[in-house]
Length: 105
Image 1 (cartoon, rainbow, N blue to C red):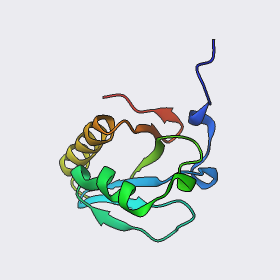
Image 2 (image 1 turned 180 degrees about the vertical axis):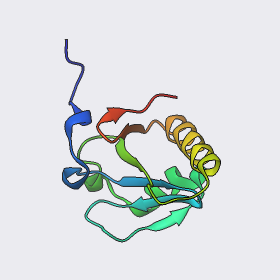
Image 3 (image 1 turned 90 degrees about the horizontal axis):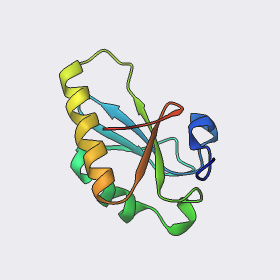
Image 4 (image 1 turned 135 degrees about the vertical axis):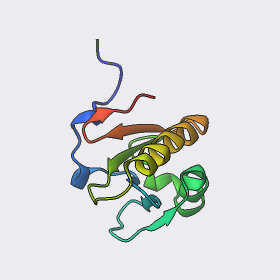
């Protein structure tokens, strides 16, 4: 039984909602229709999303796609930012999809 859209199969470049990249120095927020973004601490991502988007930017509902940066960095900082991001998004009722798979934490 299917429980809604199959977000896991939507590729990064076809995603219609905001996109996020977990980096060792924070989270890069890419609003819909934007290839330029800005880096913010993980705990502020929901506030930044709500301040810089409208209802029209959330065509798929309250769900974002998240990519983990492949740039060499400090793995412990990546993990800390990932964990803090998921907690913050969940607290604000925003679902997260990671590279084709639902994120769970």
